[in-house]
Image 1 (cartoon, rainbow, N blue to C red):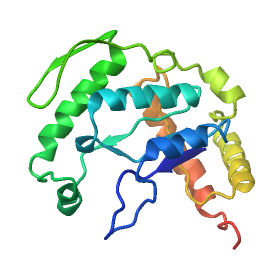
Image 2 (image 1 turned 30 degrees about the vertical axis):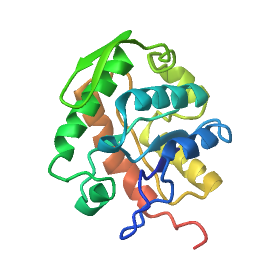
Image 3 (image 1 turned 30 degrees about the horizontal axis):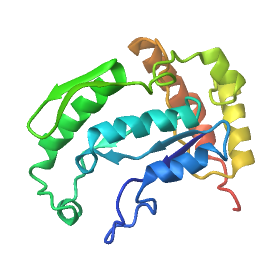
Image 4 (image 1 turned 180 degrees about the vertical axis):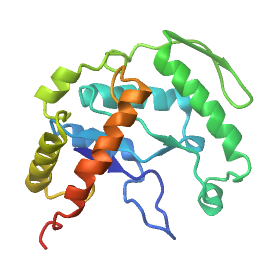
Length: 207
């Protein structure tokens, strides 16, 4: 099961989320959950300092013991960017540079970047222990955060999770570890053909 938090704004015209600082909400959620995966939908990168965001992501990964999913986006609504004194035509360039810095910071021992908006000279990265940890599928299954098996077994386990949690929104990640594209495609085909129709027929909680 996943918990996805809409980032980032007060969204005065389109109230999709009520967590203006998703990292704070997710940090609290890590201390109250054990199995569900947690993540923002999404970090709007033009609004973040990339070095601070790298450290936040690593902290959340540590607090959640590897259950944090990192999602990013550019932001598409011009008036929202204007609230932060950004013109919507410049956000793509900012987004691309921040993404480049963040990915380098999460995968390198030293961050060294010189760009049009941000410059970092040999910044040591010391927070990536769990972020770099190779996912272990057997461990994920034992912890109850991964489901695998025949379509019938997957349907049964998902139905049990839905009944226990009362959730009305379900997010799947059908590619894991070193699965090939062909293996993932076959898994998706089975899921859409033999699992989704069954789930769609379930009555919503409280109905």
